[in-house]
Image 1 (cartoon, rainbow, N blue to C red):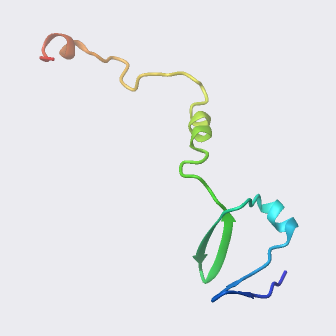
Image 2 (image 1 turned 135 degrees about the vertical axis):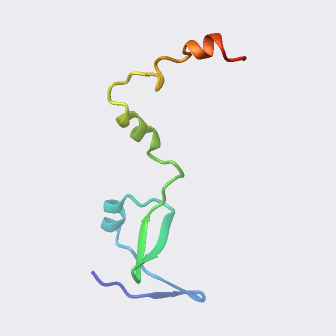
Image 3 (image 1 turned 180 degrees about the vertical axis):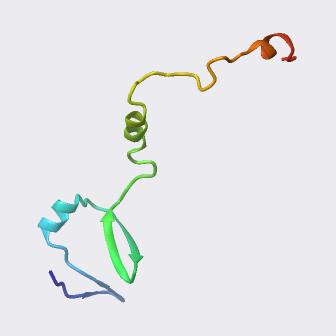
Length: 82
């Protein structure tokens, strides 16, 4: 699909057809970046968006295990000064 640039003050803009906006999940704000001489327009992402789901997916057993199962160990109980 081709689109013509339109004048908006001293800038230029494009009109994005509604079906493309809906398909991409764009609401009011977008992220813009340039990659390999191409303009990338994507829906705005909040910082850490999707992290909670990723962490849950990484812990598929849903068990909270200690990384050091023998902690505190004998040294910690008897020799170390807390």
